[in-house]
Image (cartoon, rainbow, N blue to C red; front, side):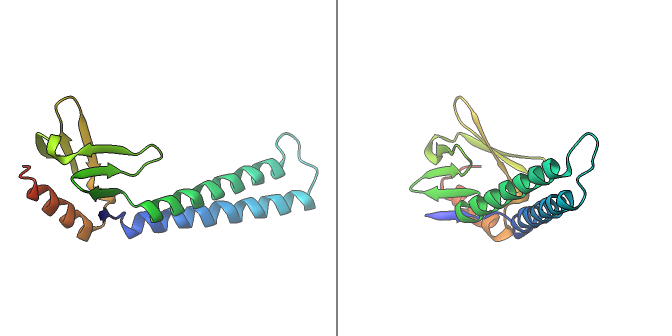
Length: 136
C-alpha cells in the first residue's frame, strides 16, 4: 500500500487555522464575560462559533494527516475524503494533465487528482505508479 501524501504546507495551514480560530473563540468568550452590555450580537455567541470553527479545522487536520490524499493498494486508487472515491487503475483509459491536475479518464467518468496539494516526492511516486500501468 502506497500513500500519496498531502504537502506539508497544506497540513500546516489547517493546523494554524485551527489554532487561530480556537484562540480567537476563547478570547471572545472571555471578553463576553467582562463586557456584557452589547446591543445586537453577543460576543459570546461569536466566540462559540469561532471555537466550533477551530475544532472543525483540527478535525480536518487530523483526518488529512492520518489518511493522506490518495492510497494506492492492489491496483486501486482511493481518494481519501469523507466519502472515499475508489477506482481500479486497470479501468483507466487515458491520463491528461491540465492546469496542474491529473485527469484519469475512465469509460463513464473522470477522476481528477489535484497535484498542487501533493508532496513533490509523493507526486513522483504517483506518476511512476501510473507509468507501471502503461497509462499515458
